[in-house]
Image (cartoon, rainbow, N blue to C red; front, side, top):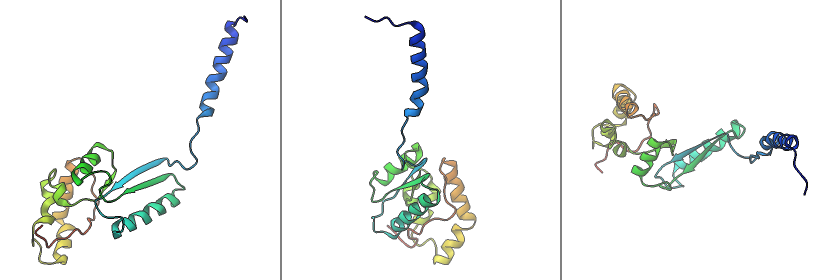
Length: 159
């Protein structure tokens, strides 16, 4: 049986330690940043069509470094489940109704108050003005980042 000398063992260990980082293999298509965008809309909805176009363009313009994965049709759970996932960091982007968000931020329910606005001109004046700023500030206090412009989910409704 051959004996193993201490110097031989140390040299082999040092060589192996230097070689291990070189063995780390990353898939060529792996993005440096991957984000999830979830919503409750069908795949065929214009929001998802545009989201997929935007995700493809972002991936192209960043040379594949940024990938946005689209999860339509409540694939990641109910609206309340997905809101919890946003809060925990499992989902980065989520389009939801103000009524769902109002379970966390009561001021977000303003767009669900039936006939609160006489027309869309009044809606956008309010949401782009002080009222919208107030609602966004309240959402921010809940630890969420909200876009300056909201998506039109209906304003003259009672459901």
